[in-house]
Length: 71
Image (cartoon, rainbow, N blue to C red; front, side, top):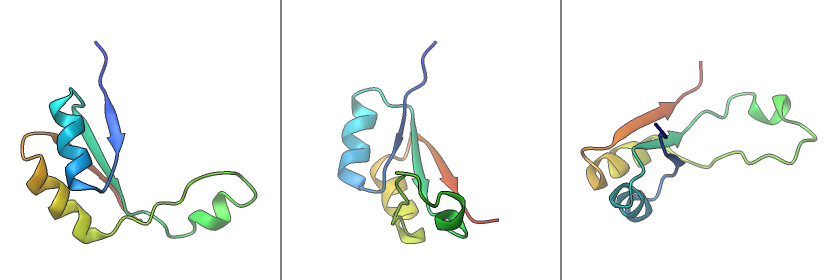
């Protein structure tokens, strides 16, 4: 079985992806120390905010919603 996951904080995109079969949506608000851990690497550090969680949940009430937070 394949489980599809999308890291996203945009409600419309989340709803579209879920309708297309994405089962898990992931809002990433973890940033503490990330720049130092990933320094020099070509990585993306999200700009997601806590308020994005409620907006995505409202757009996709039946999707599995994951949230990464700072420790």
